Each structure stands twice: as structure tokens, then as C-alpha cells.
Image (cartoon, rainbow, N blue to C red):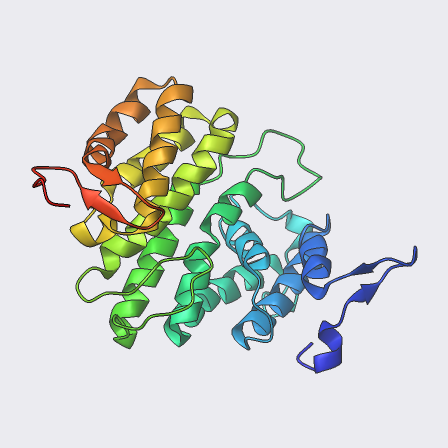
Length: 278
């Protein structure tokens, strides 16, 4: 798959074509877990080699890694065999920290894949489920990505590097990385909640709200466009969510954001004790 021609669009029998990314995404959803695990191994190699940059595939891999359903006994075999679901889990446990340590773009990609991973977690990973599957650990996945990105930044000492960000406007500034990562993660979680809160259990809902509420916003964060988006999402959630515990947890964050006057798309001014000059 590292040969250039192998990443060309795939021709279908009806004459249409699929991009390599679309083809891999389709195969990752295959009902045979051995096969989807094998495709996941291929995807990790392509992504790590930077032959492909695709947040949809990265999102799906994150969701597969945290899939709480257990492989059927008949699928288990030699763990060293390609396509073994347990082998895939071990590879993914190495893959995510590896791409985060490798480059700032890898860390940005991981953060940018969060909302897609949450959406992917809503889809069943196996069509053979005979009973109600266990709850997907959404907050655990979010906290894992946040921790991997923050820790890898400290390891690589690249905190001042500006990188291209698919979510626009994210910068790595000295002494504010953790808060900045938390803002971007919170914005994606809040965006996901506004679209899917009715599909979540109370446990999932509260744990995601708790993550957003736990992120400390700095003055630097409040100058970023993601802060404006986060405020809009939280205001929407106040209107559509009925769980009092979830809403109570985000009120301190919303209060901080409400003290900021967002003017132009990226120009914001803190409204607290403003002078007449402006």
C-alpha cells in the first residue's frame, strides 16, 4: 500500500470509483472483525508513513480502539497473526502516541478527529450483536486523546510551533498548550452534543459535559475563534438538554464565556471593566 499507484481511486463494478480513503472507510465497517482488523493495520501504516491524511479514517480507528464489545471466541487465535482483533488493539495502543510524538501535524490530526470519532461510536461495530452492547466510553476516549496530545507535546518540546490546523486558528503557545488543547477538544465535544445529545445515555451525556466543564480557559483561549464556537454550542445545549446535572456542570464555563464580547469573526474583546476607548 505504500506504492504510489495503490492510493489511486478504486474502480467499482458499476463504473463508479471510490477514493482510497472512501474504500478504507468502507472496509473498516466490514462485518468480519478479522477483516476489519486487518484493514485497520493497513490504515495505521499508511497514516503513519504520511502517505495519506484523513481524519475520517483516524476517527474510525479511534472508535475501534475504544469499542467496548468483545471479539467472539472463534475470532481469537494467535495474537501475532495479522487481522487478529487483539493484535489490532495492541498496534493502535502504539500508533496513537507514535503519530502524536512524530509531529505537530499528527497531534493536530488527533485532536481534529475527536468529533468524528464520537460520531463513529454511535454506529454498531458488529452486525452480529445478539444482545444490547455495553455503553461506549465516550469521555474516556476524549480524555485519552487529550492526554496523548498534551504529553507528546511536552516530550517533543515543540510548544511554540505553529502548524496548519484543519479546525482553523489553533496555535501552540508557550505555557498554554494544555488549555489550548482543552479548548479545541471541548469545542468538538460540544458540537457533537448539540447534534446527538438525544442519542446518548445519561451516563454518557454527563461524562461529556463534565469533560467540557473541567477544562480551564485562559485569556489566550478566549482570544481564539474556538471560544466563540464553544459559547454558541453551550448556549444551544442550555436550550435542548433537560438533564439538570449536565447543565449545572457547564454553567461556570458559560459564565466565563459570557463575559467576552465577540465582535468580528476572530476579533474579541473581554467586556469585563472595559474602558470607553476601544
